[in-house]
Image (cartoon, rainbow, N blue to C red):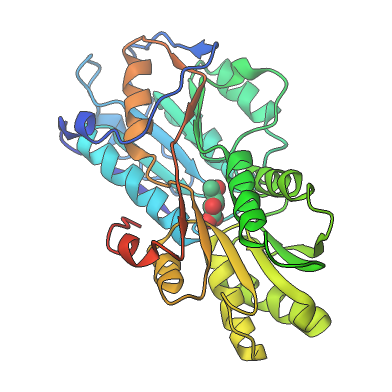
Length: 351
Ligand code: GYE
């Protein structure tokens, strides 16, 4: 799916910046080019308008964005936020949905290079394997912004900035909630962990943060840790089979995202147990649907992960094109919601 956006320049973007920018010691910058797009038509990206963009300083900035997929409500909100922010700030967005395939991401990035876009943004599906494609982009002289998930590369000069959450911290918050919740419950306490996409940063880091935190209590045992790819369907199916095997030994579910938690709730109810009561459920994201389930008492805690990265991304793009440097790492501030406040929070959710 490729969608092209051309929109008038608005000022609202500057008011819409909701997220805190934490400057690291490193920062990235880029000398903005003056040349226009070369306008070749490649793949299924519509480039017809690109070739007509005039060679002037006032032409819109063109951003090629490789989105990793549409696997969850978080992802859908993330894509929408980027589309809206692009419109709002007058950035011309060329969006490619890679449907969970790193190969498709590479193909999209190569098309962006051929088109001669001004900036490339990438939300990487997995962490590894990015070095050689980023080298190609570097050789083409196009600056790269990494969004949401990280890339595991040796040479960090291959991208300008990483914009997104601290997933390790999210895992730690989930672990801390569990320690607190179980402080008066005797062990052993059996835990199921539903992981996200194997090899993706949020799955790796949320897992680490959670395990590192709960290990202080020896009678908390992770019975099964299995990937359900961040989707509702796999969350339900994987939980069904885990329940068959472990049944009532399961006292806790830590799900790496809301979609999988919601799928697992379906499986738990089918099995005849009460989610949120017989099985304590901790999830990550903070979607409206998860908040509603929490208000019903079927989820106990949701660690927030903010998908509304569009304003931050557009601001970074503009700063870069103006030749200013931006922080190497831009982290989004996030909170934790529990069953105690869920009812109040439902109405405030934007995704
Ligand atoms: O938590 C999950 C999505 O990368 C932070 O990806 C993102 C994760 C998010 O599929 O719902």
